[in-house]
Length: 156
Image (cartoon, rainbow, N blue to C red; front, side, top):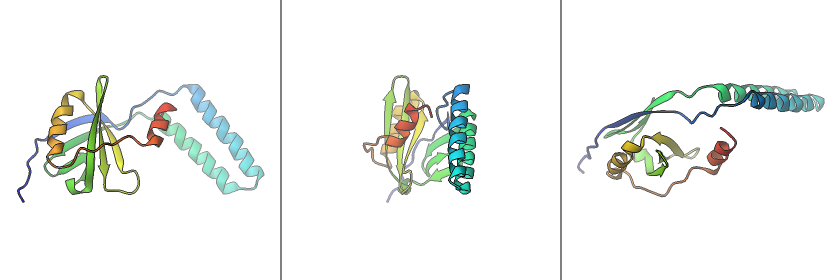
C-alpha cells in the first residue's frame, strides 16, 4: 500500500475557552463546600468532608487559571496535540464545525473514556485541514458530548 503524504498543518490554540468567573462564583463554591463539609462531619463521614474540601479547592483553582496555548499538528505521521501524538490508525474519524468566526475540529479516537476531542481551529485553516484529513480518515457526523455542552452552558 502506498503511503499518503499530507501537507503539514500547524496552529496554536488555547486548551479551552476561558470564561472569567466573578468573585461571587468563588464565594458560592466556598459556601456550598463549607455547608456540605459541615453536613459530612455531622454524619461522621470525615473522608467525604476532606474530599469535598479538596474538590472545592480544585474547582476554584481551575476556574481562575488561564488556559495554556497548545500546538496542534496534522502531518503524515498522525495528529499531535501538544505532547500527545496519535497515529491515524487510532483515529476513527473527524468532523469540522464552522460557527460564526471560528471553527472547531472534532476528532474521535479509539478510546473508551472521552473518545471525542474538540479542538479550536482557525477558520482560514478549516478547508485545508478537511482536505488533508479526508485522505487518511473518514469524515463522520460527530457532536460534542452532552456533558461538554452542559459545562459550557454553566460557564466552564
